[in-house]
Amino acid sequence: MDLGIEGKAALVVAGSRGLGRATALALAAEGARVMVSARDEASLADTASELRTADVEVATVAADITDPGAPAQLVAAAVDRLGGIDILIANAGGPPAGRALDVSEDELVAALNANLLSAIRLIDCAVPVMRESGWGRICCITSFSVIQPVPSLALSNMARAGLWAWAQTAAQDLAAEGSGITLNLVCPGHHATDRMRELGVSGTMGDPHDFGSVTAFLCSQQARFITGAAIVVDGGATLAL
Ligand code: NAD
Image (cartoon, rainbow, N blue to C red; front, side, top):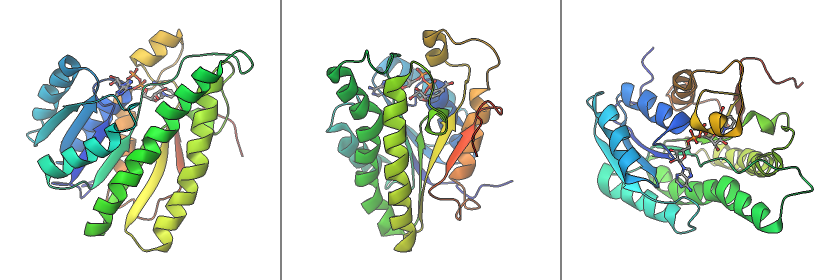
């Protein structure tokens, strides 16, 4: 299936490894021009060289997405170097594990900043650019914990739930104004990435490239009527009605 996004300008945040990188690769394979951001120049260079095998325009920007000024800088860089922004993949590293009553206030604030506010800031900056072209696709990489909170991942559970509530509201607003912009959450279950290795998770894992393909589909022309949704990619691990 041709996803109809050849030549579209995509910004993939936290895209040097794992699910972000797999998403960037899937978008590039569909002919999108991709700007990838993460903190580390070396891993970005490695990602960029793999992306270029798809024969598309590729740019990288080093930025720490927990810096409140980074989202505006990244969107400005995408406009400058790709001529606009059609597709936004909002992503960030996951917060540390911790039991709900053990986490400190500093940890709560840091998780909200990294996994809730960074996405809202990115979307706030990207939407005006997308409105100009009357087309946009926004996906936030979150977690299956929006459907079913994960024991001892209190920080992640909290931040993802907040983003899910905000994103549903924002998606409805964008639909009501006829913006042509969709906004969805893509919610991974366990996939084989560094994050899962760091958390010591074992067992059946999804392939990050499959996750990237699902996310790319949500950025397609054909997905124009999917918005305000949380698409769970977890191999059936989550139970919820
Ligand atoms: P990962 O650790 O493999 O990769 C994280 C990426 O984010 C890397 O490119 C890293 O450089 C970048 N990054 C981290 N902190 C950053 C920062 N402050 N600024 C900019 N870039 C930053 O993680 P992943 O497995 O790809 O997970 C992506 C997201 O999905 C995370 O929020 C994670 O918690 C969540 N998640 C992952 C899984 C899974 O199975 N992999 C499951 C549930 C939720």
